[in-house]
Amino acid sequence: MPTLEAGKYVIVNVSRSTLIALTDSTVGADVQSADAPVDLQSASDTQKWQVVLKSNKHYTFQSVGTINYASVDSSGASVGDSVVGSASACEFIIAEGKTSGQYNISTTDGKLFWNLDNGDAGTNVTLNTNGNDRASFWTFTRVK
Image (tube, rainbow, N blue to C red; front, top):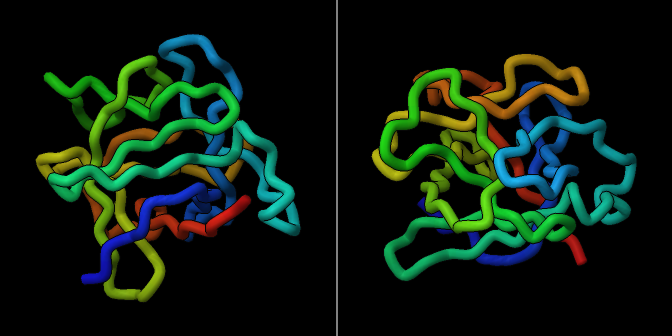
């Protein structure tokens, strides 16, 4: 499977057509869905993510707007936990699905996937075990 290149992206949920944002710089603030602008290049900095590929093939996600990282409890993440902002980087796996350009984002053990329960703006990104659910797939659009 192709590896997603490091870079600055807007991340959009395949099922919900909403992007994800970290609008609050408070540590522990939820990563949430937001309505996608017609032109993704015009997304705000809190809707953009610096995606870094580590040497171990894991990725980190840093909010361009808040400078915090997307994170989960690495010692005991469980189904339903929210993805939150943290001052410390947390690593994830990005894997392309059967459809080209659509990716799962999972914990490093590959068991829990980022998911968006509904398409309403302000919905928390949570962890789910069903990596085949369309709400667990994401597209990455490179932005400036």
